[in-house]
Length: 388
Image 1 (cartoon, rainbow, N blue to C red):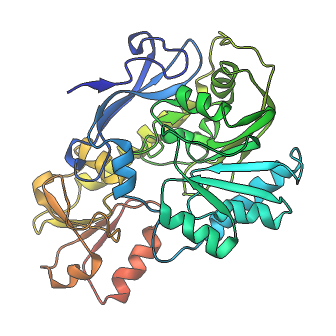
Image 2: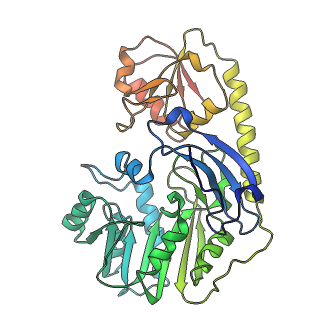
């Protein structure tokens, strides 16, 4: 199996010369994850923290096509996401003229572009792989969305004053190619807006190594982002950390980069990885606590796991419970149901009522209370084990 990313995605220094942080093993998750495993590295040359030595399972374009969370018959912005978009729009309008031509790459069904329209931006367009999403944006928001994406051959009619990459850069294998392509979409004085999870904010919460997930493979600090953008002559104009989390994990870094200036070489200074060290210490203490608690459980009846996400993958990786005691995996994500992870089929919650009674381990950090309520609403009186 060929391993992807044998070097830092920014400065291209060998992984062997970087600091190894942790290994993530998704080998039991091959039916639902793009990667079988990877190592997290901290590059001493440019300050980037990244997933390297990646064993690919499903090519990313196929994975996102099959597992898309952003396409469906119902298009709704959750209150949390809508509030985040409002904060981002307020950040952008401090620096960008309302007449600017704006392109949102990976715009989904146009939710953020519609928020920008509501803030008075008149010329907004999207770039999106899903034709269904593009149709929705046009019919409901009167926003034109071009079909395509980063890494594809894209022909756009005009250059743009602002290109938006909102929650995208942390997912991409070739981030240098991404920025190089975006540069071709910009006017000479154009800008790029980036929203990515803020590494500096990882230690603001406690979890089970969740920031190193099945999808996020780039972990940007501001110095690392600056080094990436300098390679393409982009200068930082403004940046802030939005500490309000979208998906229950860290807050997000918001930054604006202007074409021209900023140099074209990496700044080589001793990176500060204290934020990663603090986060790893917290995760280690939390994982030790979980292992101690699960060690004392009664597995004579077996048990079910509710939640097929990356936290469950880490519980398996840590051998936090006897694997042969797992009777089934429950998850409400229809894309997962019917697939198998760690030797167990993923089933819909409703099927639980027809299965033999056994304790239910809730392996979902931020949906724990909602899952408990769902179990009670279904009239199921199995014992419930929680981790939080």
